Image 1 (tube, rainbow, N blue to C red):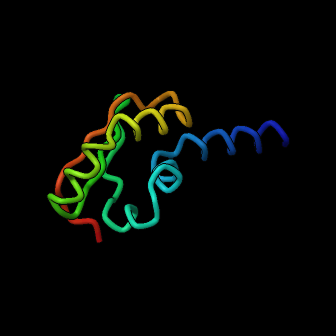
Image 2 (image 1 turned 90 degrees about the vertical axis):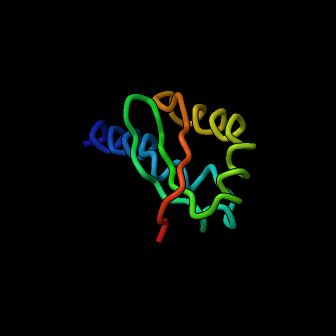
Length: 84
């Protein structure tokens, strides 16, 4: 039973959507939405070109922060799209 609980904790820790909540500031979270996670690439939708530019400037910092939490994330891709 304990092994199952530990496995569930690890799986939750690798959940890209949960990791986004930890990596971004509160005001930034209002402008993003998880899009997909495939082949080590985390895709995030952004609601405006202004925020897209903001996140592109922070891309390396965010990737480092996310990679520390999950070794599965190797790239971040930002794109414009609906976030609500």
